[in-house]
Amino acid sequence: MIRVLVNGALGRMGSEVVKKVVSETDLELAAVVDIKEANIALENGTVMTTQTDLEAAIQACSPDVVVDFTRPDVVMDNLRKVLKLGVRAVVGTTGFKQADLDELDALAKANNTALLIAPNFALGAVVMMKLACEAAKYFSNVEIIEKHHDKKLDAPSGTAIITAQKIAEVREAMKQGHPEEKETMAGCRGADYEGMKIHSIRLPGYVASQEVIFGGQGEVLRISTEPINRECYMPGVALGCRKIMDRTGLVYGLDKLL
Image 1 (tube, one colour):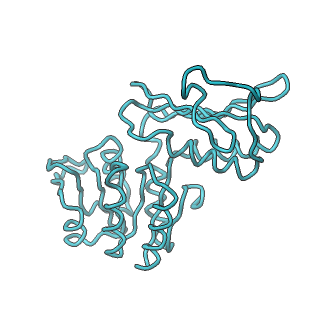
Image 2 (tube, helix red, strand yellow):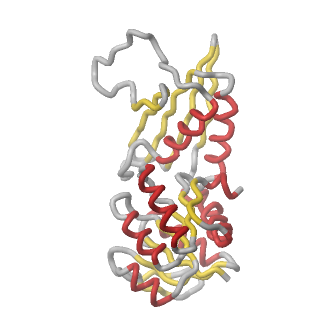
Image 3 (spheres, helix red, strand yellow):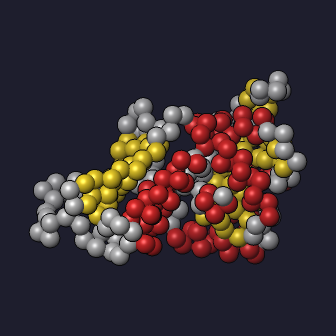
């Protein structure tokens, strides 16, 4: 039995994680943490009260894994506390810089523990990235459009960034478009990564969609993923909780565990 503490338990993703943990026979909900105190009615008929002090909650319930779906501005402080206590982490919060990843990897190894940071837990997103990398071997002109709900705090999304990074591994950096292209309105062509353009859309109604568009001579290839609801991320979260138990250091991306 893997004991799981859910941090950010009252959020959109955190509440789904709580339900998923309760429904799994090999996972046990050890505690729920959030910035405010509230009662959560579980599907097994019990009620749990959120705690507001993450470090105190870990020390009180001794979880095996902390699942963190919080905010980019607090996640690093959260993970420092988790790893220093020798607890493993599964992280869906995004907005990490390379220096953050390097720090967390070193901290996990120093405390003989591990963490999974996955920009996207949906199986469809993992397959989309793999297919995009295959297509990039034959189509060098590519742009990424990611679409999220208007409550998302960081842009571009972690999924878009890791997609661009993976494509860059199989595609030489190049400047796309006309060599004399000029933006008459700053930012209209999107962010630039190794010559690829990344566009972020933030509108009510979206969950976390992404489209990778390749242009070739007389043809366009589109590879996309379209989550219907947040339940699609839960099998990946549960898989992360199980697989991270025998790892040390940082695992970046759900694909590393599949």
